[in-house]
Image (cartoon, rainbow, N blue to C red; front, side):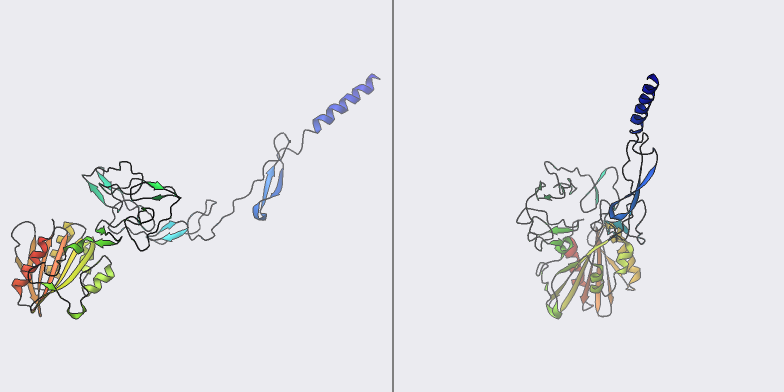
Length: 355
């Protein structure tokens, strides 16, 4: 009887311990992942359960030309001068921008010095202390630096506040507030100003004299003259000056060009005002044109200061060039004998320019 009991207890102990092992510890078993991909799971150390299904990484380059494939691999690279933005190759546009993100790819255009701040239009300025006050987004009203960004489902108002639940209606507005939410429809470049109708106008346009502003000189409406014009498009500027823009672009920092045509009796003047990024590049252009054009120039004074001017004739026109600050101005006058009129006109133009 004692012998039978021992055997019975042994059977019970053996049976209880064997039921704790659900699988063989360390054993691998295939399992199915999303999309029908085969993965594997491993039996736990105590054999009580299977681990989670470990699925292999599946590269995903759908609708992507570049960037990460999700598995530490690549979907491709971009050409030199391009960056990868959201899976597509993008060409940054940092023209004239010194800092902050470019407006196309939001790539970094550079950084400012320790005593400078970066404006929202990408310019490093010194001697200015930003003042956002209670603004949380958009540009501050002192230095034009950024006061912050709104969340994805919010918009920034002209007062610098993030709001939601309002649909902006900018229409054709490029800048300033929209009439529905006071949303900032855009920010003009530093060489532009936002008009009341929401368009960005070139500041250099303000330097063109209005008809009659210079005594005796009226807007010339002959030859289908379109009136005062301005452009920051290099191809347009090149067309306006018959292809002679290379000397401005080689100096670096060309910004914009304004032009207008005037008449005074039998004398006609074509006025071109070039805005450069700074006074140094404007001076370089002035010096280069003297050697480049082949005109026999004679210097003339505007009466002191840093202004420089010269006069020359070629064919049936007389040319007067002048530089003041970051602006280079040129008049082309017919007939070529109207030297006095040309000098007086360009001096009047430079008087409008603040150094």
